[in-house]
Length: 160
Ligand code: ADP
Ligand code: MG
Image (cartoon, rainbow, N blue to C red; front, side, top):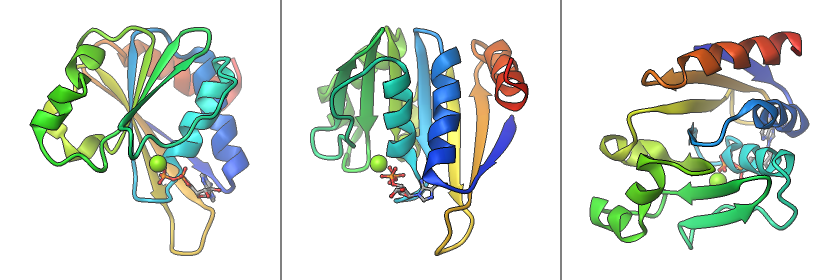
């Protein structure tokens, strides 16, 4: 696990850009954090870095968006989902079990039992009510991304 602090949307955007430069196809990224933490902003910057040109908006109502960049990006938002059955209906497991491209999931904590074995967890915490300060923790869940998370930590902290 490693932690980054940001104090503006631009800084969080920059961090997501660094992640976008390193991330590999087949990776699932789970973004935890309260409303307004910066999950969607993070995905927007990540998607831009991966060459997505169109709108990147929170799929709160349509549940999943697909963007075309240098690879395909599947963007889920589980906030409005009530049952595990709905998750099945939107094809969640097909996208997350053997992921192609990159899968990003907002509100993964709504369905902890349904998450894949391997993923990168990004937890964004707002450090107060009226503040732009955020604490962002990156961890690797499962074996697959252990090495990657170390590489990412070096890259984020040293730039290489
Ligand atoms: P979420 O998807 O987590 O509900 P959004 O990304 O939609 O949140 O919104 C985050 C809001 O917080 C944006 O309006 C953004 O400008 C603002 N913000 C302020 N400071 C930061 C920061 N350090 N990192 C990310 N977002 C920030
Ligand atoms: Mg959002």
